[in-house]
Image (tube, rainbow, N blue to C red; front, side, top):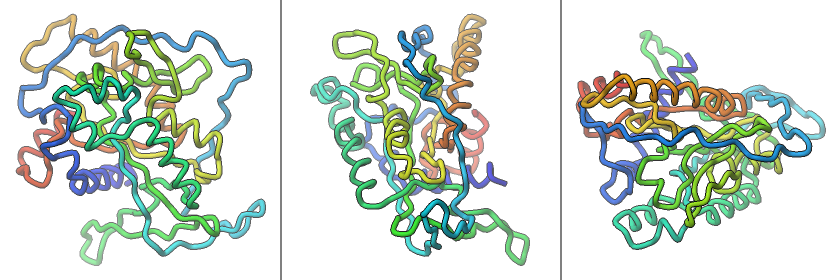
Length: 312
């Protein structure tokens, strides 16, 4: 039931977020049929060279805001019947000097992305304004009506008194090929400390492993420093396409040109990304479908949607 709900809500988000389907956006064209392309993938990035003096990873407790807790540890939880706000992001710009260098992608990046500095300020702003993160799956549930038809029902959220619920979602967390030269990080990796880090190259071509340059790792770090921003353990929903892999790993196939070597590399990438996915899920991140080929659901036929979905 929860899996169906996640997909349903992710599809609703995809329909409503027209920014991801507009002509000005910097994403590669939508992939259909057999026109997906396979690109050579660099070897898995090294993990952070130095292990922190003290392990930072702690047991992660995810609870539900739909349970009335009353008052716990001095915090009173009250029912929320107002609007649940939603902020949606694309991957963020780590190096503005590469993103806004005047090439064909610069205007689109300026329209649909934010920089690290802007993202940091947004997080601090919503925190200062009393918002707390909630999981999109806790806001709505799937049920059936009197005729046995599936319907979505709004849940009652119990929020710390004086706070307001907020959903974060992120589209296109795939680290497309074009991003690698336009100022974005390259992939998510798992560090020796057990935490998620980003890997990429700076403008001089030097390898950079950081928690301060990627939307996912920045939010993880912010919540560690401000645990009251996520009282229920929620982070955000990562809505992925599939035609250039996921999370920086080239897990996709090319149906035009394929051989045993490419398949072996794809399987290697699949294994490499599994622990990243497991840790993201463990620490409050959820996943949704942004369609496999970044197609426009509002204008696509049912047959095209079915064909696209099968490609997962």
